[in-house]
Amino acid sequence: MFTDQQSFEIVVKHIKKFPETLVVLGSGWSKVLDGAKIEKEIGYKELFGVSATVPGHEGRLVIAKIKGKRVAFMAGRFHTYEGYTSRQATTPIRVFAKAGMKKLVLTAACGALNEKFKVGDFVILSDVITLFLALDNPLLGPTFIDVSEVFDKALREKAVSTATKFKIPFHEGTYVYYHGPNFETPADKMALRFLGADVVGMSIVPEVLVARSLKVDILGLSFVTNLAFVKHDHLEVLAEANKASGKMVKMLTGLLT
Image 1 (cartoon, rainbow, N blue to C red):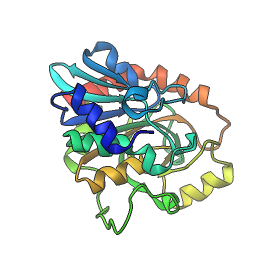
Image 2: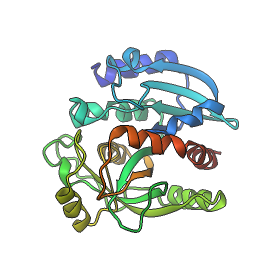
Image 3: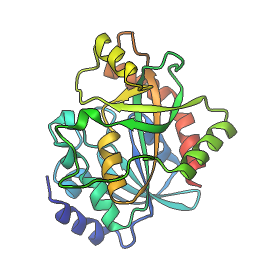
Image 4: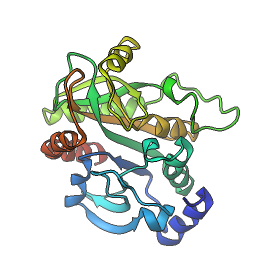
């Protein structure tokens, strides 16, 4: 994997002015690019020296216009369960913040832990549980950042307004990071729910910590693809996310314009 500086130099070579808003597109969320006017695409191999390998994650940076607004999109992300450290997995956040990113919208699929949440619900994240990054925190040194409110209040309010406008079923809730690549056992899920998590997933939290340390405004959006105490697999996750791609497009388009 390239160093942050190497990737940064590639970004500024190809993109004269980096958009202020970056959207990380998790499983199923890339449909928004179908109606976008593409300005520039760079594959992760060229940009970071490695390619995304997870089904549902394309692995490219896209600069595009959504209803006239210029936005950067990461179609796919790096995960720690692929063998990257959390610092390597968050390389794009540091690079794009240095290039000019000011706002970050993180999207992902998730499993519901809260019994009130259903498959097909959107979750506007209000908080995260970082406990399970203790041995692989992406921050180095005495980076004592304030995490009393990791998600930007104004962005969260706009997300609530957008979901309400388009009649998209949603909740607000807390996301807990789980390293993976295995799904959680029933006992894991009971423990995570006891800790106060509403949903669980294998991304978002490392990115949140790095973005917060760089003073970037963050919005977290997750989509429930499976319930806690039932059997599931990755193909089912992708299938549920793809079924809801139309609502994902409405949600993101409403937020970005």
